[in-house]
Amino acid sequence: MTLSSSPLFFLLCLFSFPFLSFSQNQTALNNDRLQKAYTALQALKHSITSDPKNFTQNWCGPDVCSYKGVYCAPAPDEPCHQTVAGLDLNHARLVGTLPEDLGLLSDLALFHLNSNKFKGCLPNSITSFKLLHELDVSNNKLSGPFPSHVLCLTNLKYLDIRYNKFTGTVPPEIFDRDFDAVFINNNKFKFTLPENIGNSKASVLVLANNKLKGCIPKSIINMRNTLNELVLLNANITSCIPPEIGNLDQLTVFDISFNNIEGTLPESIGNMKKLEQLNIAHNNLAGEIPEVICELPNLKNFTFSYNYFCGEPGRCLDIKRIDDRENCIAGRPDQRPHDECMAFLHRPPVYCDSDGCIAPPPPSPPPPSPPPPYY
Image (tube, rainbow, N blue to C red):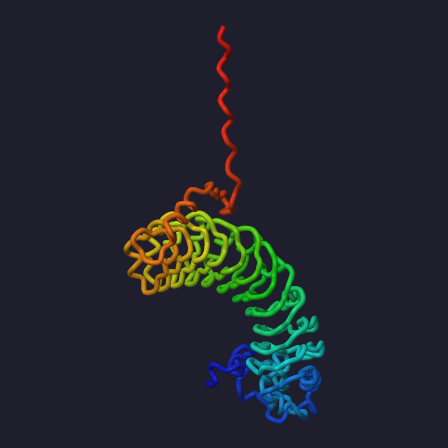
């Protein structure tokens, strides 16, 4: 690993202190911050029930800065004193729980526990991580409600809790925070996309593989200056695609596959000039693919299989990777049976309101008045 790609390099840049300010002989014996870190790290070690790669084998003695996965840097408020600024246990395959004593690591800027088997809750004591910039506890077995205490971490920019067993709702306040990236996918959350989703400044928003309700709020277009990746696949969304979605012209990835999306594909998506990947597969979309979408200059992967589209411009076939299977497009291979297409096209029409939500059909006109009696 090069220095420029390592957690240590990240911490040196974040803490903005020169490398030469390190004191090489500070330990928990002569530094109060490192003493607290020693207590926290020993508590974590004793909470680990399996360490198949012997990751914590050298977690002995007071020199915590030499522990594997522990990164020290000068304390922001006391440059002459080292502190534990990063904990990176990614891919260690550790089994255990996270103790409350972790809160003693109050100078952490980076906390990575990706790809382990930690279970239980994310301890409330992490609210002491006032400098935390990155929190990655993805791919574990953590459970309980959404850890709303992470919203108290005012310097947090990168939140990754995907591939866990968190349940319940997600507080709307998550979209009011100044996060750059939010990954909460592959949990067991059940919530409605709130109107304030457009307040988010995130460049990456991944909510996939949860149980969302409702439709895609029109306010999402307020993210047009920052949002690069929007991934809502398999999120139980029942919605139309609001035409205003085309205002998200900074998007490079847009994935709403495996939902219950109805209606047609808005031509406004042709405004997404930076779009590279568009996946709308496994929905109930119909009509024709707008040619302007297939003319997007950077579109390399366009997947719209398992819908009910009946028309596809020839320009679409020039895209590097295209998947148009299981539609109703005449002359293309691997399409739905004719009878299945006819049954779908002759079902009662779906109405989309001005917000992109599926609306009840308009009321039938009143029957005509009977003619006046003839005398």
